[in-house]
Length: 247
Image 1 (cartoon, rainbow, N blue to C red):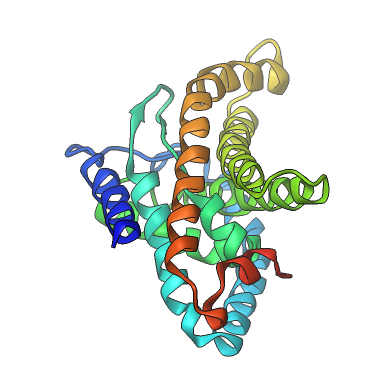
Image 2: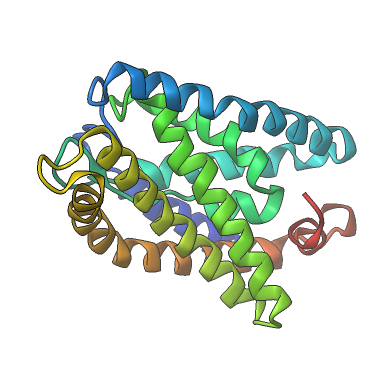
């Protein structure tokens, strides 16, 4: 009962934190040149293809994990709906991809991230359809792969699992914004210093703003895992086995 109350409390806090007024999430609609939008849309296709195969395999082998897949998607949706206004047509927010990445691997998160970003673009006016590929690439491709590498790397170095989860969530978050900075710098190079100067400017806007959010997301993800691990005791539905397995 205590663990259920803890999980419910976390969910309530997350839901209550969604702002009433929502604007653009990541790169807003129409902000990128058409050629860049097309490039990023094509770039994410292989990840989505193999992500679908990954999810199909997970569901086929473990039908009971459908609930966890849905929970991972809901976690991303709620956290990435939080908004801290920034400049240049974007905003800063948590991403939530570390949680699902640890459970299901980075490929599955590419599909989950696509669904989340598509719904947010259509229902909440966050991001946009023309910039969907770019936003998926930063948050649902690069973020999860970095999170997964951080998690596995920390475990190989014999770090406590809580620290590995924290690093995965925090680094997955911050590298999403580093990627977004790169995308914007490529699309809008500085008139004198080119891509490099523009990249430093965008990273100066996003990365420093994102650091406290990344740390907060890392802590919250650890709390989520602790709450779920305490609840799930069925050996056929083991978080320990899933997050420690191959993806």
